Amino acid sequence: MTVADPDEPDGAPDGASGLDAPFLRACRGESVPYTPVWFMRQAGRSLPEYLAVRGDGSMLDACTRPELVVELTLQPVRRYGVDAAILFSDIVLPLRAVGSGVDIVPGVGPVIDHPVRSLADVDRLRDLEPADVAYVSESVEMLTRELGPVPLIGFAGAPFTLASYLVEGGPSRDHAKAKAMMRGSPRLWHTLMARLAANSASYLRVQAEAGAKALQLFDSWAGALDPADYQEFALPHSRTVLRQLDDLGVPRIHFGVNTGELLSSMASAGADVMGVDWRVPLDVAVERLGGQLPVQGNLDPTAVFAPIEVLEAKAADVLRRGKVAPGHVFNLGHGVLPSSDPGKLAHLVDHVHRVSRSDG
Image 1 (cartoon, rainbow, N blue to C red):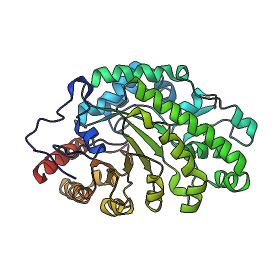
Image 2 (cartoon, one colour):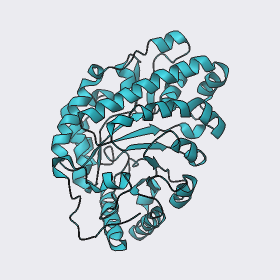
Image 3 (tube, helix red, strand yellow):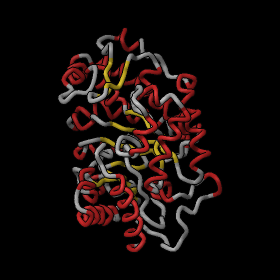
């Protein structure tokens, strides 16, 4: 990756649009003044200000309150000085918007009150319309004004991950029910996946049209599939999501957990940037991707619990490996852990900026 003159002003925003922000430039494989940084789950329980504002109410209800969403999205930008914000929301929010009885149970995760077992269950999940998530459009529009040149990332769940929740009824370690449907009732499976793909694409479009400057497709559970099953039962539907966004002109990031063996297949879905989890060295991931795509990642989230000198060394190693890619967005290889020290994360952002400037 080419690094521009380190004396350039940070961000060098292109007017009010921020299209020249380092994060967006890295996503496009262009030169940057430093390696941009943001963290998955950067808003949340690791921040005392989040706990003070969020309260004890339902997570999904909180996602429907634009003023609260704006505040919680902005908190890590203020605290850490990250190069991008990500909308405070949850991947199951669109499921609730189209008629799925879903809630997020503390300590458990998303729980579905009526798991999908038949075509009739699929039919209850109607097509997502922009009006179903008007509160998301309002939140994104407000954030775009507040953030100025700092880009906002919108996101959605990939069809396989959403289908797993819907079929299993909640989080699963083995995804046995989802896999049984895939292999035993492929027509039902693909009907469900097609509906979810259409709704994820619609949801991402809503965010982009309201002002989000990049979009991320999360396939949190794709790593539960072997390469053959991924290509047959998941890839075509993720490809549908991403290709339906071709006309938007915003970077599309694709990320999955424990997906090192799936990277080349995932890349063929059509994303502009591949997120890489912490299990695969970043330069190895770049090789598996044929050196063609910018990458995002991939520091082990537990590294922030190490002494500062160890954290800095591990971050420097990620930066070194990321140089072989056409572009690199520094991130953790999964989300911020709730017990992470915000001071360590702020130090990490400063360290990445400083080291990548001096290495340029």
